[in-house]
Length: 526
View 1: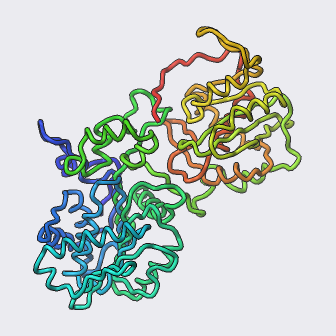
View 2: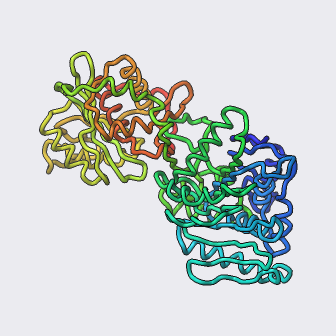
View 3: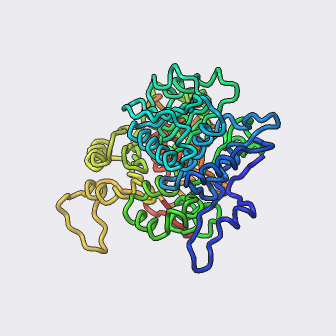
């Protein structure tokens, strides 16, 4: 059994150690790995055959093949499903090609289906493996035909084996009985495509399916999210999934609530974080090239594309994990409305695709919370918050400066000036029609705990607002030592409505006149 999560074996540490005055190598074993037990492996045959064809695999690629192609005592596959989640340009194509070559020329698999999200990706994969075979005479002579017709690319052997390349769709793959399915670009793989392809294996005695791609993209990553949840659940339980091998190279980045001496999360700027998430470092990637990417890409784009930090949609069965659906629905009240003075809060998604303005106000012995606006983009926020401030005269506007909404503080402050044409000096504070309260790190953590306790005690009232319910259904905790906060990464839903009402409720009780000093400095990480 293989169970790895953040810990490295002695073998992995040795394989990943930089050579003095030489190249820096990435981790050859992933930080997240799980596999069922096996007795033998066909992986070495695949590695040796690839080398004969001129494809010399990195240690990490060899490791994936040896484990993913592990066999039980009766010779059947130990893993029905094998998933490889690794950032782009690390060489997952080499794993695919080695596995397909083995299936064609050694494994005797009658049909191997290679699918990708886009046709151009599938065609490029066909061209790569065609070149490998053509330049290897003893393999090339076994080929009956290279099918070049658009949409029907494939390789047919004299002995009857087929390797076919298709672009995924609701109907692609139907009618074929595949011994092996290679699912490239698995971060874009949903139920329709799985419904079309997976049943093709039902009549096969010992099938295998491989999923290969990079970090999750949110809603499109339905199947990858399922596989990842299974792997993490097995690791947490300390026992293997009976049919899944899962390999993920990714970083677990610091969050802004991390203390300066935090050693449980990864610094996005460190070389070690790059090594942890990129096994091809030292082979086809270099630290200078990665540094150029970090300087050019957005913070979120760099985290996703190079450090493997993905977003994974939640499954319906996994919904309402933090606050139960029945608990939340019991607090709905059609008569609920906030009494003056209210407080507003603003929150923005990490990728800045949506923003929310939320309100909180007393409603008898409870606090009414509501999403006032949830719209695409952020440009609309300052004008809308001024309109709400003029109409309701709130006690404060709450913004977390360490969150994505922090970039709006200047524009919101400008919009809330008593006199829009007023000019103030560098050391002067502008006169505002309503104060803008900037949360400190500990305030963010405390606001979540206070909101959770208020829900548990029945001291929250709401109108069963759809954006807020959706956010709560997909919400996850992010552990922060003895406390926790709302997780922004990897939840697959827009949680700005939830963050907004949490912080708006906090704004009802904060001391605006004499805010407390920050006692302990905390590091700010994306």
